[in-house]
Length: 200
Image (cartoon, rainbow, N blue to C red):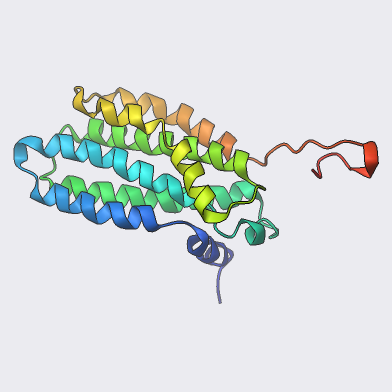
């Protein structure tokens, strides 16, 4: 007998766009395994930004019309996708860090990777939220997620700067931004013409 969590996770996992992570993760792992020791830290930091950008695509719902009709609130569905994406990207980053020889400082590198992931998920979450209800299918959804992950360009460019533990201070604010993105969009309606507020 399936539990409610499994009943929710399975269809959401099927509807998510895993292709970017499926392509990125093996390349990141191969790069981490082959990189010379003197470049291990830079490769691990870049891996965090790349995996974060790929994870953002999982917030796109290829079956939005179906999942939106379920009794499960939108914020629950989006947080479930977020946790699945974070688990996949975090596991990939941890494996890359280990394959690269576990370069340090580990806490600072991990904080940078977490902040990059939350930054990508926040941007993609808001972009997907604004685009919900429009036509275009998964191809448009990928473009939306890519636009949402655009702030990662700044994080990726910063991978050549000295690493610091200050990224952990950004985690809570970024989590709040992600939480706000996962709320139900405000729908505006008008009384004129028999339209009920909140239905258009």
